[in-house]
Amino acid sequence: MTIVGDIIIGLGLFFIIVSTIALLVMPDLYTRAHAVAKSETLGLLLVFLGLFLRPEMDAASFGRLVFVLVFSLIANPTAVHALVRAASRSGALPWTVIDQRIADAELGSEPDAHGEVEGVEAEEGPR
Amino acid sequence: MSPFLIAVLLIIAVLIAAGLHRVWAGPTVFDRLVAIALVSVNGVIVLVVLGFVLGRPSLFLDIALAYALLAFLLPIALGRYFEERDDGTSRDGLPSPSRRPRPTGVVPHGLLAERGRRATEQRVAQAQQQRQPSYPEGEIQSPHPKGRTRRPRHYREDER
Image (cartoon, rainbow over all chains, first blue to last red; front, side, top):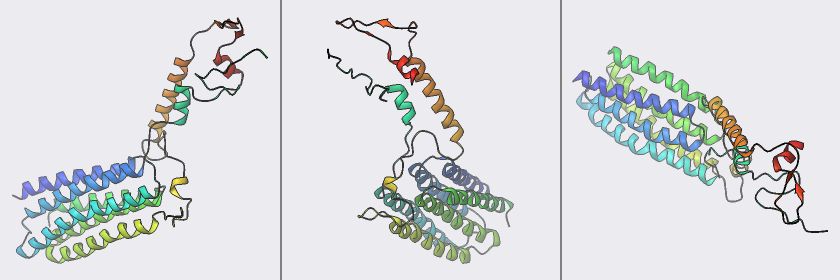
């Protein structure tokens, strides 16, 4: 029973580690919030479920652990969602891989020295 | 006193320290707040596991519950506080987020920065190779009906 609990706790610890690494590595706010809201909540859930199977568990702490578990399960994604909604209303833009230098090089959208844009030929009539 | 739970505690303590790096380095205030949300969830886990390690789970569960309540209120309250208002101002002391540059292309910070920079160089080099066909040197005849002579575009770009 204890070994099963330890395995579940280890699994939850894996998700928590992944979530923290994602918080450090991800490039913008939305991807970071994704890691914190989902992976972290799953890790918390698994760690608490593993603690239910530990021998230190007693009747007085059973209800409290259930309450903390359910509350965190609801509260953590809600809090992160509220944060990201505030950031989105403030105009935080999602990260994108389209670099302006890449767009200029691939599409040739940059006007050249003569003020012409690629693909749009200026009409050169007789003067 | 289970050694496994103590190991779990130590690992989560390291993770809290790692999350504090994002709190310190986050470019906007919302990045910091998201990192604080993660750190406080890790704190709740540490409190609960600490109760099981010390053999008094019900006491530490009460503390963890109070901490979880506070950690729930903090990001919501601060998120509303720092949200941009209708007149376009925000309280975080920086220019309004909608007027900051869009985060594009190269990862500006973090562990992937060097990789993203290299990928950008590669794509730019590829595109420049594709856009420069092997023209002969000098001027080429144009198929223009008036018979005017013009040079290919990339020569002009080289002159700049």
